[in-house]
Image (cartoon, rainbow, N blue to C red):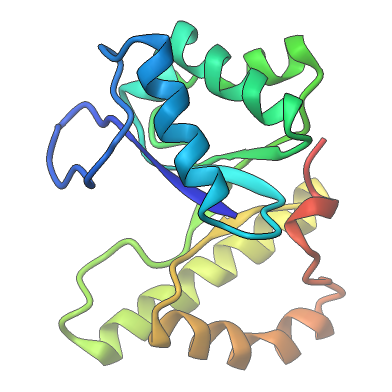
Length: 171
């Protein structure tokens, strides 16, 4: 999955080549093409940050239509409650999912507390999955996150929760 850098409302910590709302369509498409082509075997795209961009209907229609053309799904990290992504995806027939829980967005300087935080987030994700029959958690490839997920699998399985590929959860 391409974790596509999109403009946030804060403007802080923008990645190089972040797609912004003031870019012309052609500029957006050049960056998107480059990013998609940089990941062999790509199946989908999610937004990195993007609280401003995902509210921008013009920009997200452009990006999501390109996803559909490429037969990619989109996962909305839901960095804003006013995201237009799901509505646009539905209107164009694009497979889309929405994040239910962020697993590891907190201070990482204290490893023990960071792992405790991730465990709590996994419990919240499990509760969501049990109520809604599915849930999407987003985490990063951090050693603590991966460790806690691996350690949590037996307990999740005891609860009847199956960890599924994201492709199986998009609609």
